[in-house]
Length: 552
Image 1: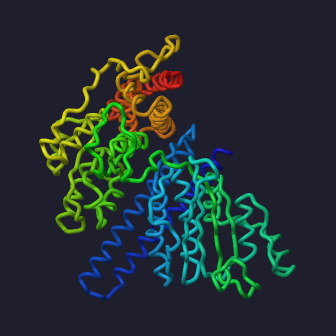
Image 2 (image 1 turned 30 degrees about the vertical axis):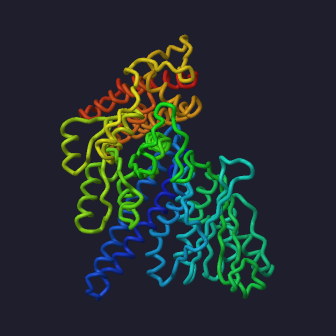
Image 3 (image 1 turned 60 degrees about the vertical axis):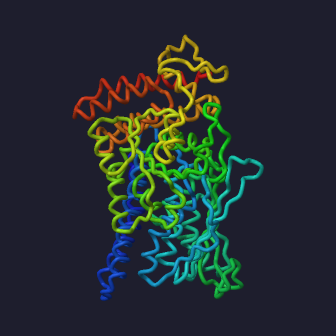
């Protein structure tokens, strides 16, 4: 009964959050089809808005599917992601704006930092919180909605960032009963109010359930360990109305904390060089990474930033297209590095879309493209090269090989031919005093690692950093296993396995990578009985977890 009740609550939140992107798409469509203006530019703009709304809807559907997986699998395991808080807020505003515009309202995104705010945390709950705060005002908040965001270091802890998001509208203010339903959903006390005794008594006796939107907002904020202020907005824009007649709208002010991202250095400031490659030949080059595996994506970001590269990273092709359509893309991005197996569209499909939009003039960017995959064969390689990619790289790729491939793609032959530092032969241990991982022999974890890859990872990122990346790859593999056990084989299973396989390969988890590849092979062959492969994966997960825990 409790499990069913929990699933019902999850589906309620998911269904509610899907209404906004779909309603946004409908608003854009109605505006386009109801217009009698036959101007070519206006038609093109309407078509672009429809495409944009459709892509945002698909992106949002992917987000809520992740929430379902996280809340309905036995372990409720969801890996935190590194993301740009400003980008997420702008994406929500782009999605909600057509809804507000359809009723003649304007959303102003004024008091917000212009720079990126790179953080790490449960991005799915941040999106849900932002959407429901802005969505409610867009639908009911009068003709003007002001959105503001501020952030600061949390006390003396540089690893934490305190975030405040404020949404202020002119919708006439929330009734006391609705304020109290919201506060009860948040587990807080009722709002004190200057209303007459009869009004307060009626509000206190109102035991109606919070709306779906309030439930979603409260759930997201609880997951972020945040708090919410519900304030009245005065006619002059302040939050201290002189009287009930002076109330012009409502201010929702959310406070929560997130971890600072691991790569918060300014884009043009190279990180300290790794001892494995002291070259600065890549310094200043801009690379856009498209990779759906969070741990693989972060490994690529960390590796390239250590060589002076200015890096941006996204999780799917739609976000990559959004960035490449910007006017400054040609100045900021020299190379696109994309995985082949992605949600919505493959790496090949992404490259084809880029070429098509370059031909139509929608994308002015003319940089180079490199492919990256855990499974490369002639068919994949030929398909990639046919789209104009320079080369297809195979996972697991080593630090020096990745840098060399970027050099070869971008720099003149005389410069690019510089040979990277020699790597140890596969399966051997690099002889560096600080990079030799040791594991107690009585743990039965021999052969859990690719020693050379692990040694290089430790040399680059030190032991704590290496273990963090390995544990995240282990978590991705565990999540893929749990999803198959809970839901069976689904359309997205192959992509999840591919992402986990690549992450384990990059971080040297050989035993786990082998087990995942066996499961992938069974899936690709259409096998209906994967029990043997799943048991092998469970054994590898257990042994690898012990090995990582004892590493060093």
